[in-house]
Amino acid sequence: MKNKIILYFAAVILCATACEYDNYEAPNARFHGTLMYNNKALPFDARTDRSPLLFYQSGYALEDTGYDMAMRFDGTFSQNLFTGESYKLTLKNRDYPFEIDEFPKLPGGGYDTLYVDNVKGDIEKNFNVTPYYDISNVSATVSDGEIVATFTVSKVSGTKYAAPAIKKI
Image (cartoon, rainbow, N blue to C red; front, side, top):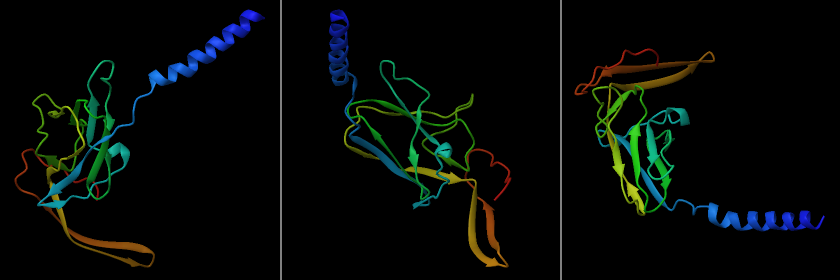
């Protein structure tokens, strides 16, 4: 019985002191910016699974599958990072409705990587994008319980890669 009590108190002390060494400080730096087209923010479908930007943290036992950067529908994005750490930033390997100048496609597939070293404070980085198509002259009305929309879709010139076919709007 005495051994069980000693073992119990040893376990409690070990658990109480282990927390002090296992926890990290909260991230205190911020990487943020906007997807820009013609000097204006480009709206983007910002569901978590659609975020094109992917961060990887370097270091011992930290290489993983990456984590999505938080994006908003207005084309802005942000991610909290740890001060003094180094990160890799790339795009997910999928097709997007635009090209991002800072992330050219690699010949074998995938996208190039940007390195964010020795993070400190507030880092603002806007990414210039060129959409494959431009939607203009948008008009929407409600008629008999249905939404009726009209708009003009035009292919944007100056893209490096072939524009994918429009499947749905």
